[in-house]
Image 1 (cartoon, one colour):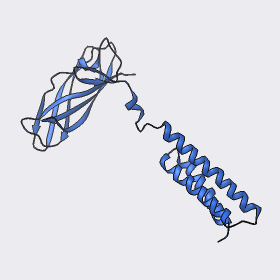
Image 2 (tube, one colour):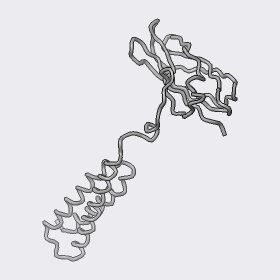
Image 3 (cartoon, one colour):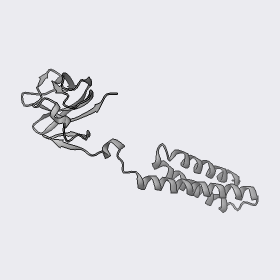
Amino acid sequence: MKPRLPAVASIVMGLAGAALVAVIWPIAIPLGIFAVALVAVTFLLKPADKNDKRLATAGLVLGLFAIVLGAAVAVTDDGNDTKSNEKLTFVDGIATGTPDAAHPPQKDVENPLPCRVEIGALRAGGKITNSSGAPADYVIIVVWEEDGTRLASNTAVIDNVAPGLTSTFEVSASGDGSLRTTCRVDRVDRTKTA
């Protein structure tokens, strides 16, 4: 085997590792390690040509760069998306990411939530009254439970509710329930409309 082949392959692996770190960072570290291993193979083959040595050195630098970059992303990545880092507040057991202590959006939604069970479907519907001083959109997450086990969840979106006015919503999910099935609002978020 000629030393140039693993030297060029080490450059390709190092570049791939560095390029893919933004998309799928866990692959950067193994690709970087593989690039460094190919550099070792290149030097075990005792390259006589200076270009082969330069290629191997470039592969070593790129491989180490991919490893360091992948490790840096691994250390800073907590495995959660940005939405899950938001601060949630709870009122009456309902969560929200909307900061409004004066008019919490949890108080806007009808509670308890009327729900019903049909063959193959779980349904819920209710009312929401905008207690803020501006038109707002709502996102309501409803869950259906039975004997402490979550059967399903789904989201209702209500657009452009004027201040002080009430709007109705319905949401459904696939599933089989019984007379013991209950539903509740798990989370409600309110955003001002533009």
